[in-house]
Length: 176
Image (cartoon, rainbow, N blue to C red; front, side, top):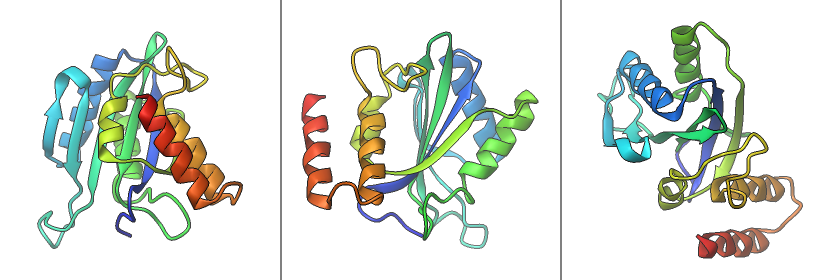
């Protein structure tokens, strides 16, 4: 299902590699999946691309953004995919194949968290420079992406209204 506003599927994979090694693995996995980046920013360890629709030659695929961030002595791989399912995150076209290929490359099933969140392309790129602690906080405070993911969960659970969500999200963005 296509993107509604800034809502997208999100996956975080924890990997026992430094962020640069994780970024190289991201590129290897994308090569193995035959997905070519539209944009690659090595210094931010950020890739923007589009999934393939086998019969349509990639003209109608969904956008994705993948980046690696430091987490202590290891790192995380964050995947933001513009497709969402009817009842939650859409793992099928990108997240699941990426995870399987990555696990096969390193011969290990890695911890993965999958959710749905509301975050803009600009917010994703801005979060690329943030470190993640194992408690999901950045070095100075909770990362914007993590905080927005928490707010999105509260909204989807009915704990906060759309208006409250938008107000709190905008406050987080203003602090950046």
